[in-house]
Image (cartoon, rainbow, N blue to C red):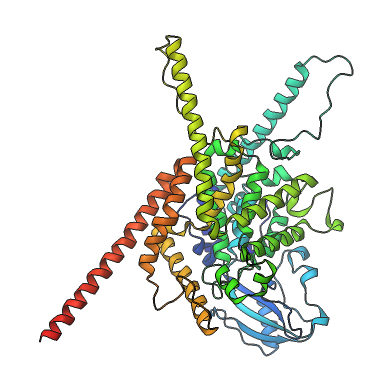
Length: 568
């Protein structure tokens, strides 16, 4: 359980010690989290194979190898050139069937056999570049928590973090023992005639349709998700899966916005919002549901081409044809996610004691539920559905709030009827405490995908420095698409024309009409969102309004100077 991935151990002491803090349980809960920092701290030399001889073979998302000093030396001996400080990819042709040296702790951490170079595919190109691995590190840190935190803390000898992780593990052990003892006690206290003790009916399930022990509701979080315990999943299997996921995302040099950093950022933002829900949110769902939505966060933009649905449809790309112009990219992401989940499950000859990779000991029903939830959550991220889904969610929240007010009114009327004026006021029930009721199951079903969707578009609500960097990144990608559309003599999509788009006014409009109403709605479900996220969003909005005022003042100053020059 205290497995350390090579993406962490290959780094220097300073970087590892900082990452141990950044990726601690408390660090991961912070709304001010900086995924760009994780990318920079985890930066290392990678190599990617690309096929040269077979037209139509897509190697854009081929496997990145972590290069050792020996691997780089072998490259140089073949006549290649390599600048360790360069961020630009370099190409080096290799002979047929050759591969580079990979740093790995064992054979299973190396390139999967199924994805190695096939001699039938002809010559290969090896691209060398510097890139981080935020998806691997973020995925491992969260999904293997708190064991990942303990492993990092011990590696860098951080006594405070070691104590925190060990305390979380010990508290979890005590809770499990207490649950087992109470269950045994209740069974022994019950009186059954000989032969009448009931057998457990495996067909009985929770409201999620799951029948595993991991379907029991949470009592809250204490230092980690404990998915490794609940589903019998190893940190090593998780890392192998997230390596596959990360190489499905383009680096920032290719996609300024929809890249591996964005994927890691959405994982963390989804987690942070979930944590804001506290014990009430933990008790409203079962572990399988949190596992699914966090996996969906990691997979929601796999293979993103850096262009929008609008471009895909106007250009009538192959994807648009396949998915009938409907949620083109989201359908592609969901399809690719299903493929990656299948890879993450492993092959039958790799299943030891029924443990299936990232699905661990889940039964058939649970595995299907995970896949179904992931697909639905990814499709929910389509921005064309934003306003309609916000309207639906608003109706669900209204219904829950109306129900709560009816309850309070009924209690008040009962107290009056019984002349009980000495009863203290009853605290108003929360939204989360009521979504488990049958009549509000739709609100419950929609909440987690809604959280993921808002995490996906949350850039304008992050701390100023992080928010600003994301704003620049998204417009850089928009403008690259606009340039492409101009080159192909296509209509330029909204916000994609670098000569006419006003970044400041666009940000103000985006916050006021898209972000603000959605997060205020979320705050009605999770009150902490208002004082943490909405508060920061308002600060960012003031910044952009200030920039608009500055631009207006500068324009007026120039117009005045121009008028003076003309008068002279």
